[in-house]
Image 1 (cartoon, rainbow, N blue to C red):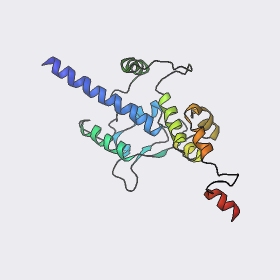
Image 2: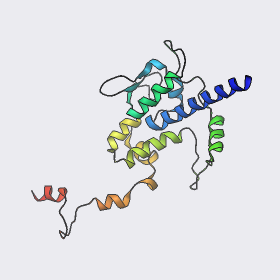
Image 3: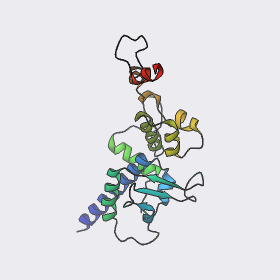
Image 4: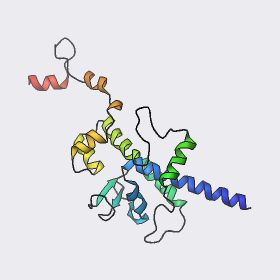
Length: 194
């Protein structure tokens, strides 16, 4: 009986940590911002775009923000909340947010090394870097990425939160027009000639 209860508690804790990490990588929220989130800050039924309302007091910048959520993230959050238990005003979204030590243990259990081949450290904040890099990989306009990251300067977004190794330079060159005019003209070339 005790083992069953312990197993259920550990499974719930595992689901909470997985949701914490998924929320970090899919929104760019910082660890402390996520730790402070209350359930009522999730606006999952909002039309047309569900979002998280980040209060000014919770944000590093001291400015509040509305952070849009992908539909799949909304579904996952709804499932997570269904398993959360009783919710009253002020109920924290995460009862046991992972510490650095816990995150390091999760990395080890998953077989992920603490440092990558380039000497970069994998920590909870690295999930924010992953969010920024994926915005660039998805060809999100730099100014839009800056707003999504809630940065005050574009240099932060482009120079520190975007991993250039993962960018598609070959694809970028291929997207250029045929300057010699020997192939199919691109839309850009047609716009210049018009």
